[in-house]
Length: 247
Image 1: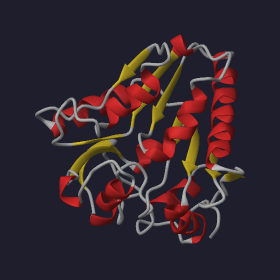
Image 2: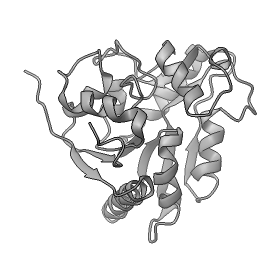
Image 3: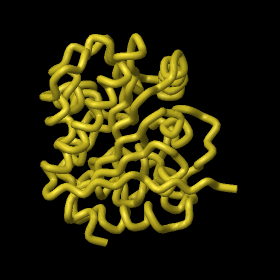
Image 4: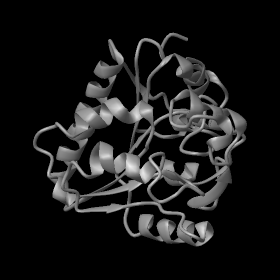
């Protein structure tokens, strides 16, 4: 029997307010954990939808960042190492280079994405993941797990083929100039790997996401809307703005 948990939902008065609320909660959790454990390991999503939470998170006081190790959840295959669309580079500019993390482990497909996936999976498995900051795609994806997604995937990290809706979202978000310039493959953490974290903080702003939010909260839990898997987690917080909450 599937246990269907209701995410804790916060609706900001604006997109910026949404990001501030989410960052405050993440910082509170970091401070709480660092009082009782020697370090924290967390995973970050890279997307325009995460800009507000990350911008606010770097300003939060009293977080002992030298005891926090960072990972990220997906990366395109086939882009040049210095391509501005690389998620690792985006996160370095948004947060990784702005804070004194204990370590930052970038997901780099290199010349052998399958081997890179296996290496990253081993690093993730070295200790529990405490916190994941993530979003939801227009098609309901989590990370790059497009529908139909395997909610019981046995692989922690894998190579995936991006569907047309996911690739179009990258154009609509202003990340790529044309559909054909969006890579067709990526590395991603799988849904079970994401749900294995102790706390999930999910920021989903904008009018393009309102249907995905509605489906995530009300559709049957299953592969056709991967974000429904968030309801399998007992400690998931969902942050919306007025546009994404409108449905």
